[in-house]
Amino acid sequence: CLFAEQYDIDGARLRTAPYSISHTMYDMRRTSQDTPKKRTLVIIALLMILAIHAHLNLSIFTITKKSIKLENLDVYQLPSGLQEPPHMSDLDPNVLIQNGKKHIGDVHGEGLIHIGAWIFVTDADGLFLLIQRGPELVTCPNAWGIVGEHTTPDEEPIETAKRGISEELGDDLLDEIKSIQNLTELPQYFLIDWGKENKNRVDRQLTYIWHVQLGKRHEDLHLVLDDEVANHRWLDMETFMEQLNEDINGTHEMFCIPIEMKRYFDMIDISNLSSKI
Image (cartoon, rainbow, N blue to C red):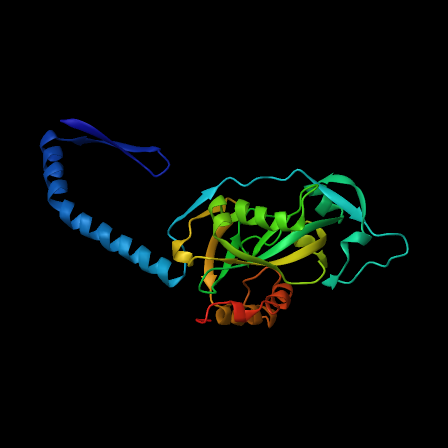
């Protein structure tokens, strides 16, 4: 007679009990007999997972990669005598005065002006990509939004957009870009006070708003998501607009900053999107 040790889920031993060789042989025969049934259950489970992915417009070909942490950003100040622009207003970047470099944490903590990008991404069918922020992020954890990126020192705005696609969605998507359109004539001055629940962070970001169209349907794209991205999904324009409006009206909480997203979402030229939308 043998002794079988039983453990709980954390590995702590619960008890030691006698276990016969004949009992072991019986379990082996029973396992062998149950194999076809188990295989059937596994196949059914896989089919259910595939169906859920298709229903939610998720890509099966998605893996996660380690995010690239930016250390320092160029910071700027407004010239003396120029009043700070209101939130979501046009601002000519040439009026900004560069004021050195700061660590990205200090940039947000001190509310310093920096440059970044927002990127709406659509596939060949005109579906919009949404990404969910990870639960560990300070600002808007678990909220849904679009691709965003900070501009590194000496980087052109359009290069920031391309790098944002590469770092958050994978290098492969750079080869799938059909067009990149700047949605505003001038970048937008964002002034957002995130409040106590977000460690009193203040965002003063001159933001370029981009629309990137991909040449393939989302089912045919290979995404390699940044590890700060918890999830992703693809929505048609009508559903996207409905959910933004629900957020703005307070009947649904999904997006980080829905009012801002809705304003620039409305600037996208729908005539260039698929006829399915």
